[in-house]
Image (cartoon, rainbow, N blue to C red; front, side):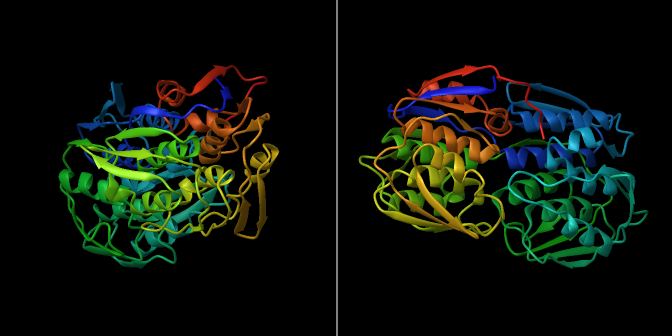
Length: 424
């Protein structure tokens, strides 16, 4: 279903179970290529991006069984080394098979990813790091041919703490000869989850979650069983939605240690945030207060929660300033919010949000994954019925999104696309 009709005005209440982390599960699936045999990955969210990664693995020769969140990846039949453009264009994260393929096969042929709706995300850092480790590259009609007959350890200093580059380099380095040191590495919880997975397989990694990661190359990897960490962005999305609607929801399975800054910012808006059992309870007793925020790499405020926060702040009391430091085009969705009566002005990487009493329903589009979630949050607070189209973006990252909304008391109904949608 590609359209969602949302009737605003209902506070969210109840309990929602947080899915496994999209941005971890995808990389663990890629890392399974390192070992021959059956790797079991638990708590994998059934979302479009994970379905695409299944296609990538199967294209390479793996067999994948997936039921009730448990995925079994059997790599015994892997004999391919090419990822086609058809799959890479649907999901840029498929580029992370580059590292494990080099460690396993010594070569890879991967379609070059393009830009995306939130700005260009180049893979220069991936390639420069792999080049330091002895890989060589050729461009061939939109494909990247990479060969590395003998990967060797190296000291790699990243210009920016790129999550994708850190992950790709880690997965290549575990099979390299000698020691690799990644300086200015990304520190996200998903990096730590990948490192734990690789260590279980036989890798030797120290410093994951810090700016310096040291990897000792090994000769052999074993298939393992691993449980994906909870998705901090999904948990943050529901927490923001609760605050926007004046609700009260338990985020079952969410981890506070992965969400320190987002939860702190929500507390500044007036939310009551408490730890209850193995989850987080979020309650908003009154209309949100304006706050300022700046997106930065982890442990800073995540760019993947910035659109949702702007949807909340659009009807907060006072004026907020949001500064986006990660993606240059992340404000593209602001025009959609303004169609609903928001008062947001952008200049460069700053947005000034003057809170209005209430948003108004209007036909709007989900321009990308997180912006789509933001438009639904805005619709939950608006008067009347809002139609959010292009919901396929949202289905890339949220499992059972409409069903979870309905279980929390939201008045939503899904419908087919008015015209055929093309994934891009």
